[in-house]
Image (cartoon, rainbow, N blue to C red; front, top):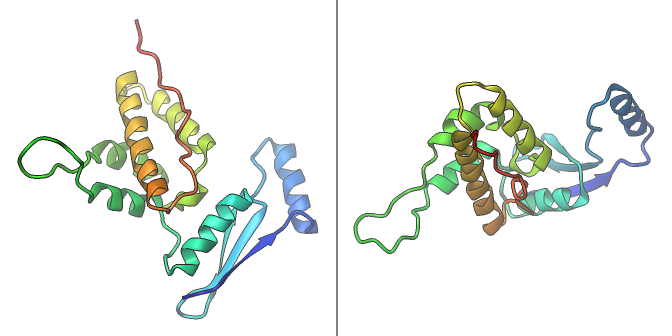
Length: 173
């Protein structure tokens, strides 16, 4: 199993300059914490995240032998677990079609621990800008994403669910 370390870049001069440039341009500043490890080939890898909590979750995944998980891989794992139902018959799997159609093309390759609430809210705005989608469709996509991310929290792949607290879009009258 690889060992991973966490580096706080708050006092690094290059990090402080990058934060100033981002704020001047009206962008989100870069992540403050850096997780470093060597992969199985011996190459040095890094992952930059915004909070110490996310860095510790990524470090814990790495020390357990798990590679940092992308959102697409998390959705694959979630969709493979049957739903608990009281109905007889074969087990049903979660419906992943809304995520395949609207979320994974935009964020599927992104590491799951780096997804923030702002990313989810930007996704809602992007889906809302697409005039072909009704508010109920957008709410369905966000609800499905919440369930997939909650699966990641329950099984220890994410420290928290970034989609919690994102309000549903009101239906047009």
